[in-house]
Amino acid sequence: MHIATWQWVLGALAALLVGISKTGVPGIGILVVPLLACAFGGRLSAGIMLPMLIMGDCFAVVWYKRHAQWDKLVWLLPWVYAGVFIGAVALKITGGSKGSKDVTDVIIGILVLVMMLVYLLRSKLGSRFMPTSPVGVAGTGVAAGFSTTVSNAAGPIMQMYMAAHKMTKEQFMGTIAWYFFIINLSKFPIYVVLSHFYPQKPLVTLASLTLNIYVIPAIVVGVFIGKWLLPRIPQKAFEMVVILLAGIGGGKLIVDYFLR
Image 1 (cartoon, rainbow, N blue to C red):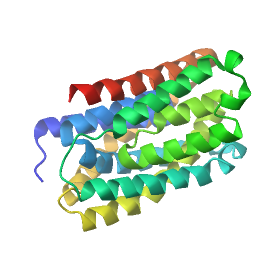
Image 2: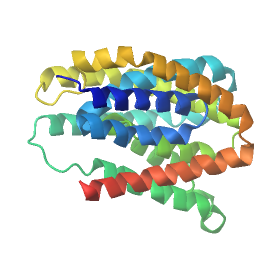
Image 3: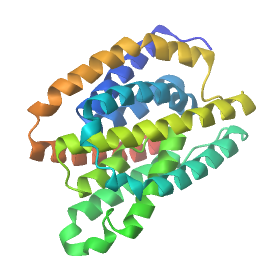
């Protein structure tokens, strides 16, 4: 696999955005998905993005670990792993099939917009429809696990889940940092195994890992930019930015699907 100059540039820009999203503005991470997909295609871009995310997760966990709200994750994680399993099966099926239009992104986009609508109408709908209810936790977990496995696009779903819990900025960052650190580490062996069995449609290659190594400086710059930004963003503005970017990200996934 040859990586052209323009692909290196987009890869470095994606790495910078990953860094910023992990420590300061989480919603901006959704822009990385279409950016890498444009440069490398949907399937390989997922494998390129994952090591970037893990590197950013390491910084986020170190800086915000003491703010994590573990009670918000304990009941969610089992459902997430159910979604990861479903996502792995989906990747296995698509890995062995001929290329066809993938509806995964549009499904994720619709889920995000539905969650956003439920959140904005929470006063009229009642608590049973919120992501914090038992049914909401299960649905959020499965959707997040599935979407993060097939395209690393669970960010908007998790942002809506965290926003529903009304955490402080630091609690939000600490909780979501641990969540993604645990889940992303779990996904990497799955990507490697699927790449071995389906080399015609790999998720991880030697070239992709080489790119990951070279863009580490961009990730580091990004995490420091994010760390600088977080205390300078007012709490209310932070919540609105998270919800707005989640909605934009979900809408973009749908629009991009129909424009392919």
